[in-house]
Length: 206
Image (cartoon, rainbow, N blue to C red; front, side, top):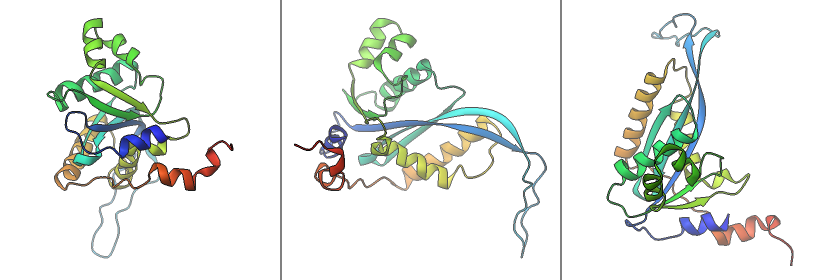
């Protein structure tokens, strides 16, 4: 916990920016019957029955101090999927940045070995050398700022039925672009000093 909090207290460094990532499963749902549009004096009516169109995985990367985020919607969340998203982060989002300080949870796919599962050894090694990884502790995913972004996404964009992956991609692209253009970000306030007071129960008694 203190390791992640120390990362958040660093001053901004464009040579090694702090980027947080997270992912979540999402169920695609379609309407079983066409909704009745709202009209003056009456709300929109939707049938409680719906059609399941499978699941997908939403990835999000965010740099809080730059008020930037990027989303991706994939059919799966395998090691290769994660590795490809890391490649995009390093080679397309930050092509000229020497190193990325990456904060994420310790899911079994979120590690350097996934790069070797996806790319030849020389490329995997080159990508890994540009990462400085910091994991949130077990049961401590609340420390990942990307999880807060996912919560905002849930409230602002996902609280309705979205039938297919392409529609979801379009919706999330619009959502992330809108937040980026509006310079929205997470104002993280919790520090190591706060943790030692408010989470004192987590520390050993000496």
